[in-house]
Image 1 (tube, one colour):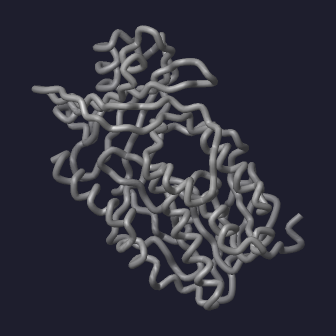
Image 2: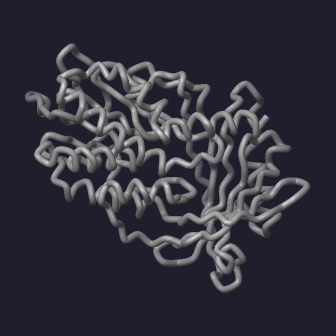
Image 3: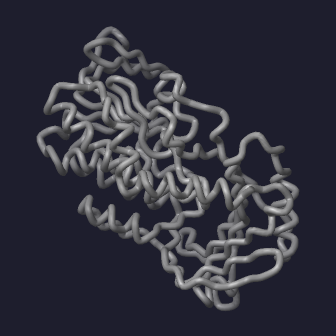
Length: 348
């Protein structure tokens, strides 16, 4: 099945928020380009995705810019309870909580509706850069493109193949989802998200969270522990035992639920996120390490990657020599840099 090579202008590896947003924005900018875009993802959508699921106003602004309106079940948050060892207070801060499998699937469908070529369930196993093209290999097919956008998550094979992955920028998250009584659970009654920073005293460079959410229409609470590791030289905290203690204080036994975990890669403006003909976007490039919020940044990465790709096609220049500068000077790039500064000092 690898006798022939299929050619595209752009191959996007990863169909999460960054990859799907890039595909959508590319077709917004150049509708006739749609059939020349290939969107690959190793998963079949809808697929499970661990995440707090917070969709901020910044994320909604990007969706509006993309021209996307998604009917995805969401629970509105009106305030945040912030907990420290010696005090607790509430902030009037609004966002909405979604289940990522539903949100990502809706975004992926919106990209497919634009006429792009999508191959879910096809894993990339290799990438080879050549002077005039990039070859992308899957178990069944060889593809060739003028450029590749690597939006394939924190464990990005694209980043690894390019030597851009670093082990010292990996955050850790673990979480469970518990059923809830919407009439009596305070997070539902008061539309409140909980950010508990007391695990800092146990060596966690992050926080425990309780986010009320709707899982297939049923009220649940997404509970997790985020360890940014923004100071990677420090000893690793015992996340599972600390998480179990946090849950026990809330009357929940960890061993009664399915514990899941996943890494995140935090953004470092000093690192490289592109090489000629290939650029990274979304979690493959990095999220902010203060709260680990990734959705709005992934969507913004998609927009920027699409614009850079269109400019490259117009100039027939795929060096991406200006991509790092574009990242640093963009609004969301400045925000990523600021959040890293905050995290570095906050979690010391």
